[in-house]
Length: 428
Image (cartoon, rainbow, N blue to C red; front, side, top):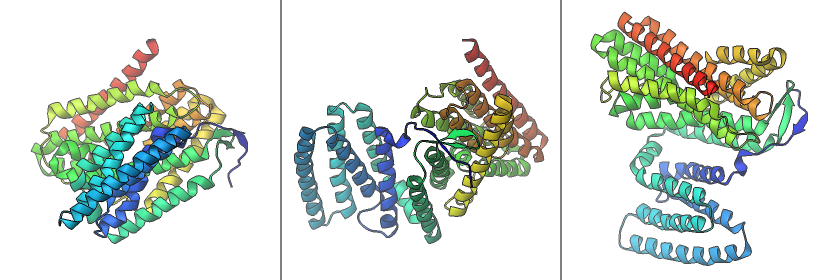
């Protein structure tokens, strides 16, 4: 049993309207997944759009009584119009799913207009972008849902149930764990987010993996950087002429890992009591741009590479990451408490060898709890990222000399670029 004591209250990320809208769309997508897999007329896009519209109406209705009346009248009119459109499409023998999606799209458009008119500009843009993506990615979403095996569908359902059942059970606000103030709900959201990133990118690699090394390396790096390095190592070993694009694949996996850590650091500090952890932007941005730039200059991005990634749709995998995250968090907290910033730096560097995402989330939680400052958290995130780059370079040692030399040289250059960005930002 972890030692827990009340320490205070901080901002809940789910209290932010934009986060709630995005979550509503994601939950609607999950609800429609089984319907899509069962080949029903209302599927993955229709359910997601419906949830999104429900969130829009709820957000606006909470502002005023007049707003509730106007929304009710306007909503009824749009519902009637959409119903008539769907009925006409079905009676005319048109595609029923198209009619349903068009009807719900009208509701989404109405919600966007209502949001913008009420001053929720950012939220309105969020709804518009999410709705457009759901409409444009029709073929990809249908393909993804249809290609899932029953076992994968069951694992996704188990993970989703676990994710959203555990969250409300955890105590809100800060608690003191191992002498460090942490937020259990935020920590759980981080675990779910990292696992979700892996699942989404697995689906993207399976859909777009044949379109070139740029897609395979980057998206594969978000899903499983180890798989990317292993695949590139095999290609470089089998054919000398493949060394260039194999190196590019490893560098793109580094870029993907840096982008993921950057997103975690920013997304979970924007909603905190303190300022966002913007110090990570310069070093991780430099690492990302450097990796992408070198990969673009040294290889043909159109080269196709098939990537074999183990399906992440497994409750066991998610729980395994959660357990690893808990261990990293405990080690980081104890190291920081006993040895200060130096202890956290050592912990982040060592943890990054196993999971840079786990080390990053630990540093972010310590920052949110006020245990460490922005500078210390930034350095910890950078050390975790650098350790992950070093691991990929070490894994490449088993390849041919040309592959090893290039990966090692470019990895050192990326680390130097990140360090230079930190130094420049410090001087400013």
